Amino acid sequence: RKEKISLFLFEYDTPRMVLVHNKKVGLTFRLIQLVVLTYIIG
Image 1: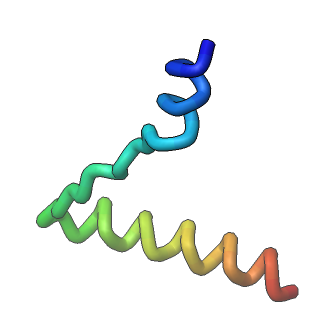
Image 2: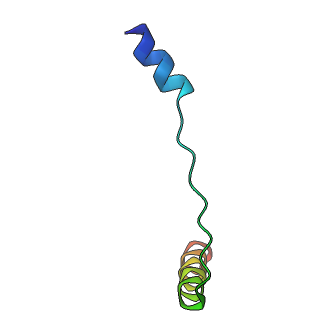
């Protein structure tokens, strides 16, 4: 039981960085970011 608690406290996931050289994917991603940002601010 103690091990589970310590694992929960000290274990974490790191997001993997992915670099995509695709203008359509990049543009879509930025567009989605802009829409979300506009929704949050507005």
